[in-house]
Length: 262
Image (tube, rainbow, N blue to C red; front, side, top):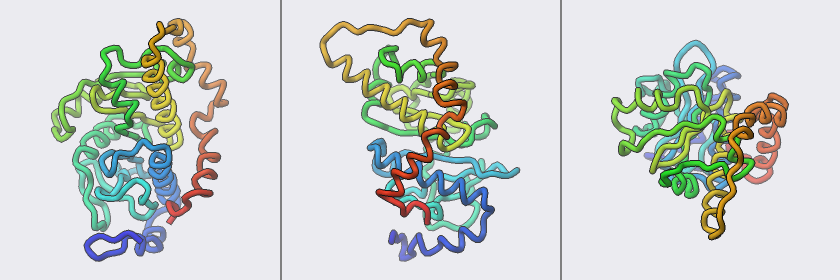
């Protein structure tokens, strides 16, 4: 049981479930699962990164992690609901990471197609984000990233509202955003899509770091193959995007760490 200021966070689970729509509860479960999976795959950075998901419905509300909990502690009921101005919607003993709000509110306000925004400071991702050439076409994983990749220059910790329009401009309509000298960001039409996109992003960076450390000349994949990658992705996933792998990922998580559902 996780406590803050004397209150046990999970004690609110039955109340939260009964107070929200079934669609919101299912979104909460998926988002909590995403946090736990990010921890399981080793992409978390103590308490300092963030994943958000739009709350189904006409209000411009989204869910984000309580600032102070490890990703392995996040539950469906502990997620904080906020509006686009950063105001909490409902009670929580926790606050919201201010940098997390700046980045995520900017994307959610600008991209109606985006249901989930996932941002990490993974070791391989930050390493590649510091390389002048960015992502290179070195692997099959990389072609899917390169087919929808944008870059945003580092402006310091994302606390300045003035950065929002530049971040939105740089992301455009892309699915992958490399935050230079900072980390990785993916967006998706679902939590599943954002997570699977991040898997490919991080693996792409891991392969690149290892390939560059091998001391051999690197072979680049041809641009015409990169140009056809999005069509190939739709064929491989049968048009389901991350949804094809998501049930298997939830089964994996349920075997190891089912507490996220509370």
